[in-house]
Image 1 (cartoon, rainbow, N blue to C red):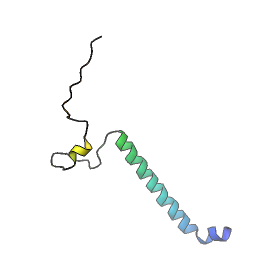
Image 2 (tube, rainbow, N blue to C red):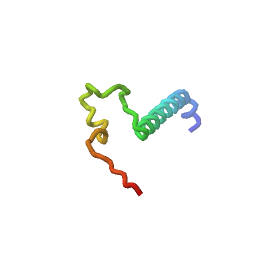
Image 3 (cartoon, helix red, strand yellow):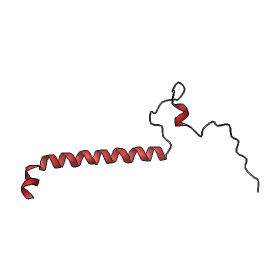
Image 4 (spheres, rainbow, N blue to C red):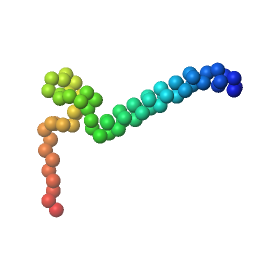
Length: 68
C-alpha cells in the first residue's frame, strides 16, 4: 500500500486539488442560485430564455396587504 502511495503521490495531489476546485465551484453556484443571481450576469432584454430564468417576476399578480 505504501509503495502504491509513494509511486502515485503526484497524481493523488493533483486529483485532490482538482476535486477541491470542483467542490468549491459547485458550492459557489448553489450559493448564487439561493441568492437569486443570474448565471449569465447580463440583461435579459434579448435573451430567448428570459422566461425560464425569471418565472416569478412580472407575472401580473397584485399583492394585497391586510391592514391590521
